Amino acid sequence: MPKSPRRKFNADRFLDKFKCFEGVLRRYCDQWREGLDGFPEMLTVETFKEWLRSSAGNRVAYKGMLEGIYRAYDLSTKHGHEILFDALDQCGVEIPGVHSLHVEVLALRVYSEHPEVFEMAYDFLTLSRVDKFTMFRGKDARSLEEVDANTERFEKALRKAFAVRKGTEKVLVKRFVDGDVQNFIVYHEERVQAVLEMKENGQTIDIQPLIFRPVKQDFIAYFPRFGKIEIESSTKRDTSILRTTFGKVFLNDPEFFDSEESQTLIDLERLKDPTFTFELESGHQAALTDVRCQFGGKEVHRVDFNSKDVFQTLEKLKLRPSLSEARLASAKIKIVFPECRRGKTVTLSDSNKISFNRSTRCMEVFRYLRRWGLLSA
Image (tube, rainbow, N blue to C red; front, side, top):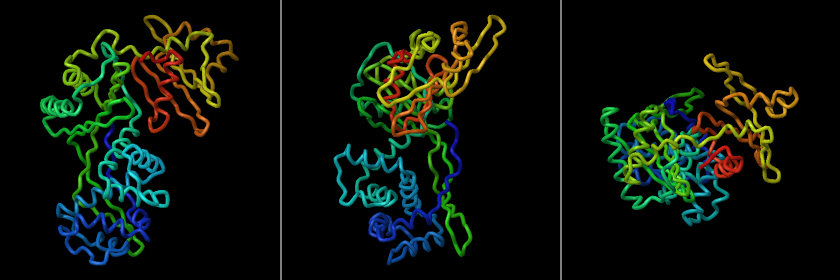
């Protein structure tokens, strides 16, 4: 995953949402108050802004307080709003008048009053931003046992593995469940400074507290019904370490995902069938929008076909039979759901790489790929 840019957000816009909801801001800040220099006795949105502009911000309490505000800000989007509601439902937590709260207010309130719900929502948000996974098929479908204890063992094993590779043992593993899928986020030591942007006398100023946030993260999703693992990491070497360490710790077999068939989950050959069509539910649409073909023997020639509907275009040009003569290196399929007019583009490449935005409709996309014979696990 590429390194994130320096962290910056509009603090004035965020804090203005707390007008008439200052009580939420006060309750959040109360846990830090004793360690904050010059903190206002009468906390309002305006006195809090003024204090932020003038505070040196070198104390641990100041860093911790702003870290929570940054994280609440991360969830202060339309998608974050949906994620917060999902987390509240899953944890069985009810907040009076929840639908009348701005998402900024809701996020900070959940952070203060129900930290376990907030952590679940934040984990969902983090994983939803990942769109490119490499998949590996296991030797058989197998459930994970003693998951909590083995997660701790997994973290310790990764510390040792990355200590050799990266020269650091600072690794943190967080786990959460989505249906029957076990998800893991692996945080690394690499961190960047956070920057707070505010207005003062009509001018934009940057406040640079000594807060650092993790930016290097790897992701693992394990599907017990298929014995399949998906990994998102920035290098093949890190992917290999994660795959073998996961197999060793959770499945007692470091080679669990290393069989000859482990990396053959995607079958683009199905698209070469002249009778292939996208079987869809009522109201759904799908089209092949891009396909990369390779022709020839020793000298390989690459041809890319792309349009709103590649099959339809090739039929008009009487070129569809040419697909059967090519090796398909990659393909893009656009799936449109009734409430999502822009659609969701799914990219399939090699034999085990898949990329699409997983923030919504993730399981439905996988069901379609299996239904069409393009995904075998």
